[in-house]
Image 1 (cartoon, rainbow, N blue to C red):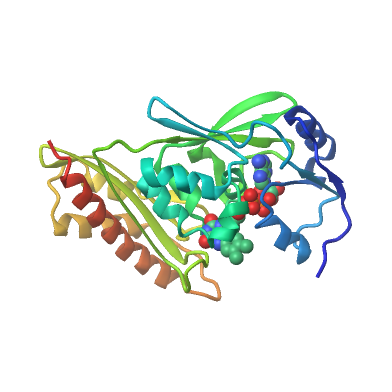
Image 2 (cartoon, rainbow, N blue to C red; image 1 turned 120 degrees about the horizontal axis):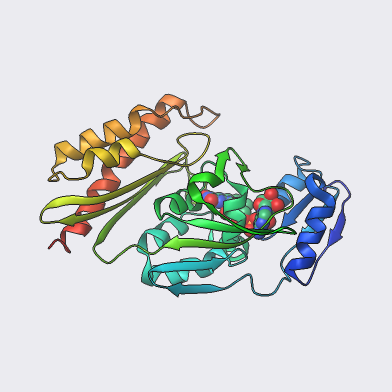
Length: 289
Ligand SMILES: Cc1cc2nc3c(=O)[nH]c(=O)nc-3n(C[C@H](O)[C@H](O)[C@H](O)COP(=O)(O)OP(=O)(O)OC[C@H]3O[C@@H](n4cnc5c(N)ncnc54)[C@H](O)[C@@H]3O)c2cc1C
């Protein structure tokens, strides 16, 4: 199948791109890596009047590290972030390795994955886990949207149609933070049925900090705050991890689809949470003071 007809624009300046978005509003779609948008156009699930191709915009594929924080331009390819992360943020590298296949990550962008907001996507959950945010630019100026306010539901964010996502910001995990990342997918490269990212730091044998994010377990990525609360201040042991995973999965109400029932996803989320926490603690123990 082929897309419905559309006007094609490839602006050369961010200001021109946001002018186009302001002009077309809901009738325009931004084209970044095209790995999600093109299938939707071909299947006519999206029929925009105009495409605003941002691939020729300068300065949107940057990668900068300052004071423990990472800034990645919206157009940075997922593969470029993966290469950086394999040295500096192994939890992010582990997540990115499971985003489709290398060919998809060579084209797919960091901003595109966040703007697309598939509930089963790895990067939105990582943005939550790493206290991240995005910068959105419109004709009216810029605003910073924390990850906690960005993801509203399946393929739905708080970005307005006249806003271009220009930058993504992430906390880089500290050296003493242990990490765990697990997902279950039917085949390598498929979207996950469910996945969990966990970060844990220890001090004096007790859990000082815990961050857990889930994907594929609801309409949008979420933090397992009940599990985090069950862990902080405690001395880790297998019973504590099992109890935290139970608490973290308790309120979940995952969607059912042709691949899995909601009940199955909830049960897998609990198991993966326990595994991710166990990995994170094992790695954190090496740095416990
Ligand atoms: C076979 C296959 C398997 C895949 N498996 C996975 C997987 O396991 N995990 C996963 O997370 N993803 C997976 N993907 C999706 C892939 O990660 C996409 O790259 C990503 O979802 C979208 O990024 P993109 O740059 O290609 O965006 P595009 O497809 O160009 O755009 C996607 C959406 O985001 C909007 N958008 C893009 N950039 C911006 C911006 N800067 N500002 C505002 N809006 C913007 C577009 O308008 C569109 O609505 C898979 C894709 C394929 C084809």
